[in-house]
Length: 563
Image (cartoon, rainbow, N blue to C red; front, side):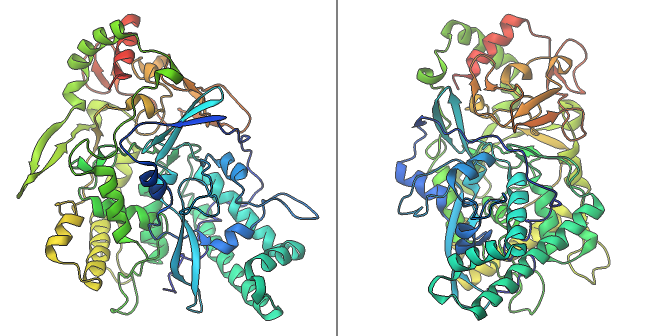
């Protein structure tokens, strides 16, 4: 398919102004890497790492030919070199049948895209594994956590790719090397001119978005490693860029941490604000937000056609969920050989505290899906903002967002209604075009309707595997599990993010300054670290339990390592 506005070669590459090269940490791969036992085979893991969801970054030939944005008279190293991509936090993955070019986890080739002339072209896009595969390190040893939060900086990645593309266009020598690699045996003067024109269009699309973002100050809060304002940025792409409606852009200043994926397919509502009910709707929205091509205007016969790989998304969801609760991807167990033994006596004392202080919110309730007696779902508790007291921006931004779904629309609809309509239409169009029966549709939809909402609340998900999901709170504003049990005024107001070196006593990543690390400032709105506090005083407004002694905090941390 062609003609998707903004869906060409990474239309977001220049969303941030091209001002210069980012300071990035050096890539230091783990010398010895193990994989947590999470009920996945190696083959399942490898497939998940590189299966395409239909998103488009750029043609694979472009990505492999692109040089790093450093000045060089003889040619810079490849942008796609694993050690370079590792500086953005992407996890290296060796070459294999599913990954012949040895690209990092979360980079997916797709050979089902035609180029602008309708000829077959392999593209590369990002898949959910890029943001939902974690790794914890201690010294030179590491352990991979499938479905865990990644420590990637996608903003820096986009900025650097934008700089690299601009340098390629502006430097004749660099463009000549790029063209020779991209065109191969079809290299000619005419082919180079067509390639140059296509590159110009890609850069111009990015500059259009960059201009709007700059003028409207759409992204004032830096996200850094391990965070993304997914609903905000995705909404801007779908409602603003794809619909080509300047009225629909909104400030996205509420970054959230990448959540863990285990058990999520069984939740009744997902997202930090419990906005989405149906697994298919959630995953289609995610793919669209990561720039899958979708027709939201034009001739009726093309409307809602999309590059989203519905069949692949369904298989991913089945792999994560398994045939029954806890039969799919499981949370990782605390690796005592890497992080040290658990104090079992302290953990036993901590369990009593957990039952008294945490379980009431975080354990949820299993129930039968309406109309499907053989299907269970975990009804996760939603905690109102005035009770939990954590930074409200993520929930309130989505609650207040509106969008016009057509150029001649007289009034906007809520973001929840708009995304519900769009994703429902995209899913239905694919089902109809592929002859999917009503029974198959119900199963692929997870036996749930595609419902969206926007509550002024955050979910309290189960705490199994919580030790492997630092930093904490929805916005990643509390670096360690230990600090989460402190009153807010005793938590770090500023800390550095981007290291995978793990502190087993505090349960979180090391936070000391380091070259290229991201400075997380909790005084910035959207980055607030208040709420979810244990301290004496009336309950509510962020106070959820009584003040804990030092021993009680340590006991509770030890117990949380066991679940």
